[in-house]
Length: 293
Image (tube, rainbow, N blue to C red; front, side, top):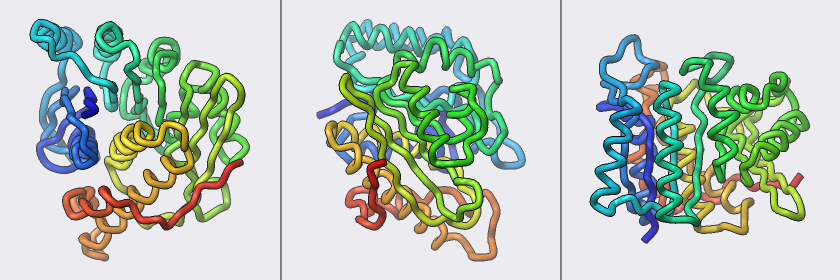
């Protein structure tokens, strides 16, 4: 059975971070070692929240506890929201120690920086991701804003720009780049790209789906977890991975909208309905298809 160490945020109520990632991975038969980078009452999209952040030094203490008991044995590392440079640097120490135990381990990095022109984390993290984290990652799963920040390129407005920036990220090290969402200027569709670079070539797949009303939190966390699962199951079929991931996430969002009152646009009403979406996560619908660019 495959095992993943997931280092992300935790909320008591709602579904973001590890709360959005762990259940889907377990549904697909994965053992998940859960390490929470923060513990908050709810996600930060609400009017207020309470809680605390894990320090880099405490992360390394937890790492030592795992090592002392021969428990650091994950096949994959998955990271999401990180709130400080010191914690992000400590994650890299975890990754290096994991590689000693599992030389063929893979690192799936969701570089949570922000969205729609707004940072969720200190801007200083961008440089740490660029120079230290991205070069060590196997798979990277940015949204459009995050891809722009990591590459230092202009805002993405066309498919061609998106594809070029994926190539820039490949140049930094990762063999697979998922651009998890972007909306081309003047088009009422959402596009998702999956790009893979091998020694001989770079291939990029595109998938389009209609834009759903409103906004949701936790979709990137869910998406990264599903990318990990399906890329492990289909290592040589990126199109299938893209289709399974997007069709699952889209179905979860549709279920979330069904449960929300049509006139209720509050943050609470848009919490992902993961439990109610168990069946579609286990058996993704075949609605949207990937196209090779």
